[in-house]
Image (cartoon, rainbow, N blue to C red; front, side):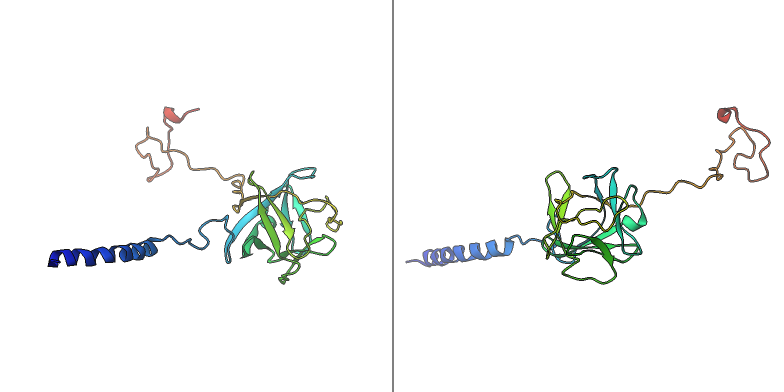
Amino acid sequence: MGWDEARSEQLGLWVPVLAVLLLEACQAHPIPDSSPLLQFGGQVRQRYLYTDDAQETEAHLEIRADGTVVGAARRSPESLLELKALKPGVIQILGVKTSRFLCQGPDGTLYGSLHFDPVACSFRELLLEDGYNIYHSETLGLPLRLPAHNSPYRDLAPRGPARFLPLPGLLPVPPDPPGILGPEPPDVGSSDPLSMVGPSQGRSPSYAS
């Protein structure tokens, strides 16, 4: 056997080994928390939880400073919530303004607590195809529903889960205060269009009403 043939045979033996090494090196690995749908540990989202199930009007889940949980027709600082993943499919819900955790009692009553209790304040999150979510107490298995209007302490256990639509956590832009007018356009027909010398004495017909 010649030198060239022996060398070719040795190289041929290394080809499968190199192929295996390259395959392992190029194998893709998932990036933790790369998608909000994965809900793995440490992921934090700021959302408004909107629901229209069995409500007289549209409602956003609101955790108030006194610990009561109600449905508010409009978004407010008290309805801005922080959803943090505890483990896959399980989250905690915190009121951003009140720093109270959303919790649920054995009778289904919702309340806001200043201290996190894994038994009462952990919720299993299920994503639906239409973009809505439903939530259950991880420990108690009770569905998450807003209380009836003006009754934050109603027994909610016999009822099914409400569908909540997580809305991006952006407060509506407040309107400009009354009486403050924007600057007028420059008077291009004046010798001092930027009013740098003194008050403008005339107004261009281009801006006349």
